[in-house]
Length: 312
Ligand code: PYC
Image (cartoon, rainbow, N blue to C red; front, side, top):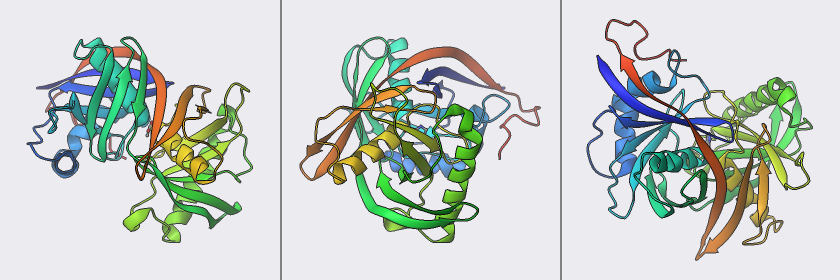
């Protein structure tokens, strides 16, 4: 019988499950290499933690690892129902609040290693976290795509720690009641990108689709719907998706450095963002809150035919 200690939280409705103990030994070395070991050798562990019957398609996992850089409080690899993620904004906020809950960090500034770079975050000692993401940028603007059963749309390709295709001319209301139509269109856009060979830099797969539009609340500046790899939609405004959006706004001259942008997610939760040029880089700052929802010991019973989760 194998036991895994996890702590669950949610960030604006999007859940994060942090693996505290019982994870596989990923060895030492650069985190990108350890992520590759996790992906290729320990994929069934990923599935056991986030997939049914212990989890669901919505759940994002984070395995807590020793950092290679001694200035970092921890290292982590984020993962979901189908694989690993580069960075995860809501997950970083959830992880920070989890470390606070465990008494492993106090209020103040900390650094976290992710497979795509080091992010730093300010923790307020309770539920609030403001993170400085990896450098983000727009790769291509207004890429024209024909979407079967829908018509022609245009999207920006941007990096915010994951690759995004951001579409504003979708014509759909960004409303929770409209989630089936939003998911259907986003899936079709994703298929069209694959069909047309449209990628991020160096042929990287664009695995997140972000539909953007006006906010519901006049206190905010924008709203989004984000389809994640694996088919679930982000309940939060998506930290990496908000970073990608801010990079596009900045590239268009629509957002000045340091100006606040409040981004609503599809549930109405808000991340507060801004961008900050540092040398040649553009660093997004994303702030949100997370709450602990549970603490559990998962059990892997070797006699259970579904011990390693239901893989889609
Ligand atoms: O907050 O960056 C994010 C994220 C990515 C996938 C789900 N959430």
